[in-house]
Length: 269
Image 1: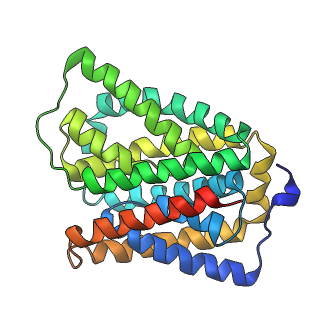
Image 2: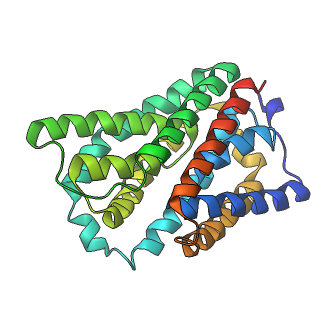
């Protein structure tokens, strides 16, 4: 992949990025996520970025959106409450940081065609998670002791790989894991997910910075900022609309969008 593959920003594309980011943010806000899983297919299909460039751009925007989400959530879930669960965060981070580093390395070595296929399959997996794992409520942890520790390492590793390969925060996988594996309350799980996502994404971002494709950020800085700001505003709006649209209707529709996006990404050349 060379710098000639980079799609340069124009004023019209920057405005479009902000509008698309806002629309994606609304979708993400409606389900309590940042929307990066919806943003990635659009970076590829609508804006014409090559697979790895789209992943890197998505990663940069996800970092901005998740950082803002952490600040916004401090009012609802105090930092002290989040910090009190440091063993849980440490368990998942021990796996996710390694997964993020290795996943980013694998992504940079895959050809565009193979990366499109991997992204397509992961979009399908996230669609399944939206349908079957979203809306879980906390109960007793399914595992305890060493079994929980081992499962946390494995789950963290897988989540780190997915987050790196797709440039997402991984909340769609982290939140169900925190609820099922550790019995964490859904509200707290959202904040813990954000706290775990930040260092995980940062590690993947550092690994991507060693690849020449990282230059896409230098040529598209305003594009990234515009789409990230649009995503933040859209997420805030989507959060306010929670409860207006029934989950029974919303989740199948959003899962369907991911399935269609998966097919389009698979066919993308």
